[in-house]
Length: 180
Image (tube, rainbow, N blue to C red; front, side, top):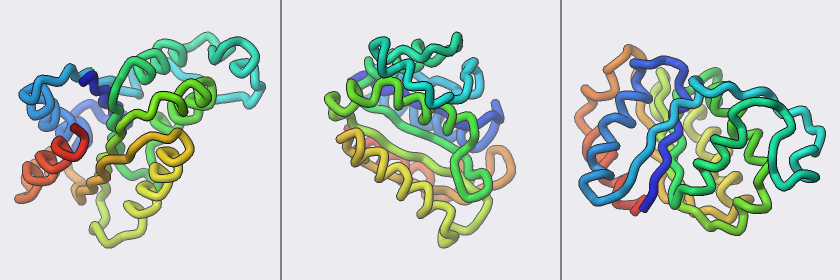
């Protein structure tokens, strides 16, 4: 299986990146091809709601990295979205990319992909921020006819703190099994 990991964190050594780096060897060991794409490294413009992509085969009219990113999503069998929590939601960088899914939503709805969600926030896991993000991705999965296989949240603030949690490996193992 070809798995695309979308790192929504702008912090190059943050907890979200640490989780993904811990997840990658698990997936590779199972024989999957894995690509990690750091969304903040992409040159993405905001969606103008011009509907130009609907008229030209799903290509954004803005000269940015949208087409290359959407091609990677299209080629993947499974997509894992990973984000820190910013003000009860996903990062602006990941939201920019998600908004660009509109350019290929017709194509994506026919692909029936598997997807996963990793969320890292500073608040306790009982805080509604995690539920709100999971509900957003449940709606996205429903709209695209994709199968949300897992949603795993972690509470951590300082870089590397997430990896010190006693259940991190168990949760990532369960996520791998659910995705594949």
